[in-house]
Amino acid sequence: MTFEDQPTSEVVITKLQYVLENKFTREEFYFWAYKWVQNFDKRDQLTKEEDKLHDYLIELLAIDLEIKKDVYFHPNDDIKDWIQKINDGESF
Image 1: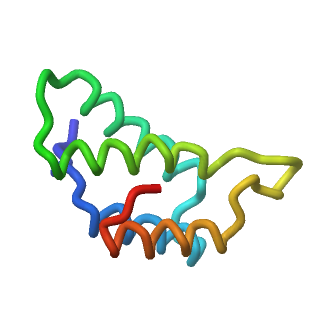
Image 2: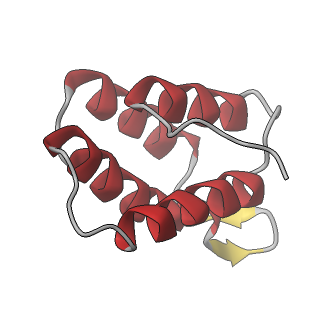
């Protein structure tokens, strides 16, 4: 079992950039994000930053939704928009 530090907004952005660069699949991102959504869901209390991160991750779970084979509901431009919003601290 390996230990992984809790993600930050910067880590989320890096992983989204990896998806754009084909270093990380959308499905890999989904499973990684889902793990952290579950982690945050199990907590009694979240900091303001953790709460915002939790909200981002919930929205980002839609990254792997396909309309048809290899055509995604959220194209790469949406991922770029998500990165910008996270950078700016905006909500989705």
